[in-house]
Length: 156
Image (cartoon, rainbow, N blue to C red; front, side):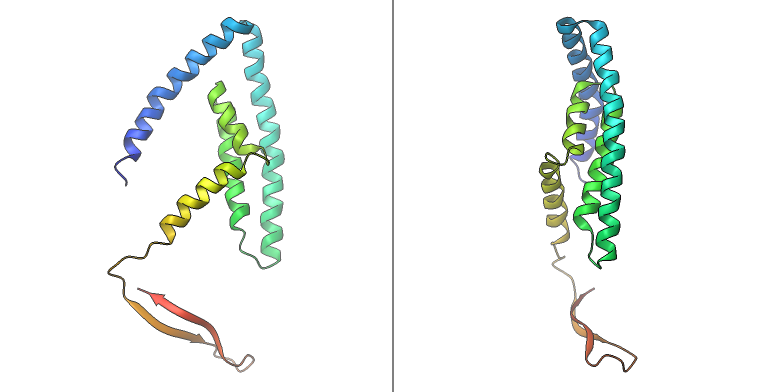
């Protein structure tokens, strides 16, 4: 595990609730207690509906891409972001609601998707320096298709 993950999680567990409570108090003073509670309830209901709608849309996109024989990487990333966004909207607080909406809304989801794609891409593109590379090819056992089925490098 990376060294920075534990302090980041501890910081989020401590700092995020403090910021959420502070913001709830500020909004409560600004618009009143009942409107603040109503706004929080409205965000939960809207978030639940939006997460359900976008989740079904992501699921359809995954199944359609798979039916076309494509690897649904973007669709899976969108599905994960919708799931996290829905969970964030269920938590009480305005900061988590804002981040949840960014993850859920299709026109803002491209920002976290790009960050996730870049983070995963940079991790998966690294090859260990001590890796053994074996050139090879995979051939079919049947006579239906001439030539190799796959060509390329095998990394051990």
